[in-house]
Amino acid sequence: MRKSIIKKMIKLKSRILLTGFAIFLLGFSASISLVYETAIPGGGHGTMDSVAIWVAENPQESLLFITDKTYGYLEMHNPVTNQYIGRIGGNGSSEGKLGYPNGVGVAYNVATGKGMNDVVFAVERDNNRVSMFSLPEKEFIGSFGGNRLDEPYGIGFYKTNGVLQAWITNTGDNPNTVAIYNITATNNGATGDFVREFNTLGELESIVIDPVYQEVYLSDESEERNIMVYGLNGNFKKRIGHGLFVEDPEGIALYDIGSGNGWLVVSDQNSDPTQFEIFERGSLKHLGYFIGETDGTDGLTLTQYALPNFPDGSFYAVHSDKRVHAYDWKDIAAGLNLDVRVLDRASTSVQDFESGDGAVPEELTLSSVMPNPYSMTGMMNNGAVHFELGLLQPESVTIQIYNILGQTIRQITYNEQIAAGKHQYSWDVRNTLGEIVPVGIYIVAVRTNNFNKMTKMSIIR
Image 1 (cartoon, one colour):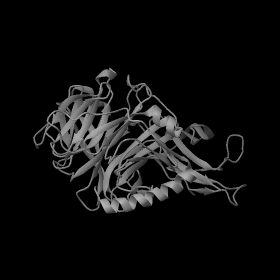
Image 2 (cartoon, helix red, strand yellow):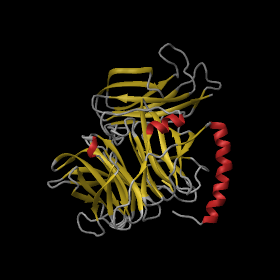
Image 3 (cartoon, rainbow, N blue to C red):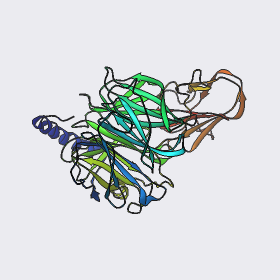
Image 4 (cartoon, rainbow, N blue to C red):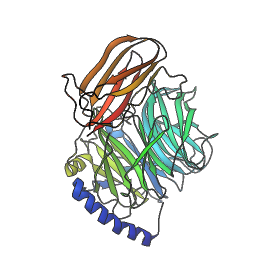
């Protein structure tokens, strides 16, 4: 969403003062060198909005997908050779055509009528649907949402009970909603079966889901201009990044370094240059930002899989509605003193944490921890936190407490046979040695033979 130049300059001056103070306190920012920018194909193209990457089993055949909202295409470039490859779609409403594609996402190993395929998803605002194309064939295999979606924009992925879900931001109604679909195979390809939706605040654009913390992060383009945090159940939790964004918060991506650690990267659509804000995964504390040569960014994406030209992973952002800029994650990590984690095979941060979404009743339920946050003040000797576990049938249950580094702090039960029903548990905020644990973020993890659940809590002074 573009604002007037005067309004933008006023906000930019305010931002300079604010971020100068923030960086003084929090300590990091960096300018990162651009590796390359994608070419404009012969004959030109329209307004480019979002970007996604597919890393092929042979990395040399990988593809960058960029949405062309004007002419209805997914434009394709090779991220290794930086060559223009071609287009998918074109304006229209028939199968395989695209009407104002805005959001784009890639999922790996998706069940289709032709077996397990990698799939690129194109979210079409004007056709009110999501179209799917198999990879590497680039063949149309189905669409969904046409009877329910209204001006959809962004897409995120989550996996529950072994089923891939597409979470779609839906902007045509007030309030905006997030619509959830199970991706299932059909005879000829795949479809999306509606599961549920929930209302949200603000004006939605991009979405990403953290399966470890069971949270949904939504870019809000309203006057709030920040990131909204929701639970997987659709309950609003809080906002982060208030006052950081000069223009709209747009693209958002998750970088996973394991054990619940990592970062959220969010683009600020300020014109010159775009600032990519970094939030700590879990705590959601704002850490700083980096810039490059990129302006006016809408969408962004990253991959933690090695490409021949990017052995430590790579980061991509749309530049001024016309190109995509490519950056080496190694340079970003070095500039901001962040870690690098390279995955063996491309990932869309789709992990199988069994949430029971769409299943009534749930086989396993886990309440929030109470009180949360837990305050150490005046409760050093006899304090405890409490939570409730619900089982639909008898299960062998293990309950463990982890710190933010993924280290086991305390084991509450181990393979204990628990009857069906509601069960109350408490933790005295002590480790296995009987010592009171330090302040920080902790995760209560419940595992049965068939399901897993997690919830997080914080301990403060």
